[in-house]
Image (cartoon, rainbow, N blue to C red; front, side):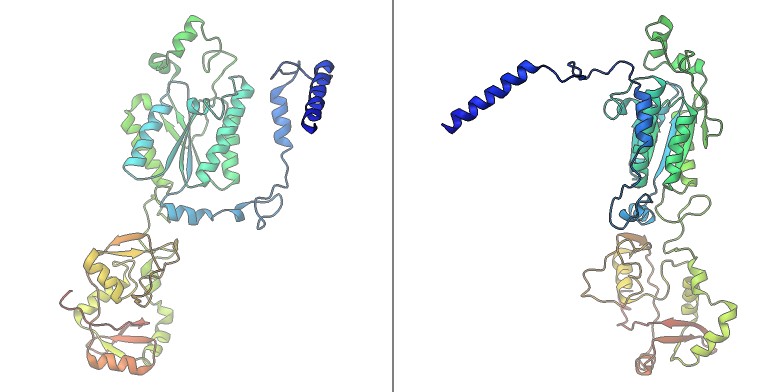
Length: 428
């Protein structure tokens, strides 16, 4: 009986609804837009009304930067061994944006092993922008959406290639501003190709359709669809005078200068700094400043001494001048065995895995947790042999440092936290 009553009530509700019709003021046609509705004005209104109190995590402040909710940008870049950047490639249809971007992406991924994402005008219109047409308002919205997506990729450390006609300077400037607000690198690349050349290329047959009247409004070909060339692009690429390979090489050169092909610090030419560089060259860190000589010599006088040979003096100079980077002293047993058996050293120069001092720590064969992800080539063992007498003097002194002196008794260096281990002369 309860089931029967429930069925009767349900049928009654359906019957009543079927007699009442649609609510007043609502369209009966799915997806219909009310007459006079301005979608562009609506977008502007909603964007201006974005809630200012969005908070991604408890550590962030209301209405302020949400950086506290994410992995620090420099830490992310160092772990990925590359930096994020957006190359915004703009120009007429047929100016070579997609062709050059594909070739650039292939070279960066396959030869350099980098993470690259191409946001192309055609592929984003099959998904992200599939609801947009080609009116000025829709074009502006297309650029805005792609600009926001580019910020996400670039912020994640990806080299992002945007290939959009993006005809209006104001829209491109807005995309640039969004990057600048988030501290992200942005470079505008102008495909500087005359309209006559792209009409001749016409890779998709679109210019032919414009001439026959099949397409009424087309960027650069009609008054209602102008193209505004960028007045000051970071890169001007007249690729109609260049091969694809030459164009790609030019872009890679600019990326290298921007320092994005490496995750760590780079010099003004964009080349990676030496392993272990952390704002100061290794030789500047190891060499005693003239103003501190007297103080260090006084300290050395209180320490046990280790006599070093002329060969050892040469190795000391190699270390002190940074030629054996990342070594900051003679090798401990762990680094020595790596050098002998692997011709390389594990390093963590940016403390990505918390092992930045892995080659300065006392060798511990039971430590299975301290790990570094990178290796640098070093095949020559750089060690300091000592006598049994010196070993006893060091171990009996109770000091945490040793004074290194030459055959004339001159103090040349102070070796801190020494590690004494068996002389592996047969292996070396």
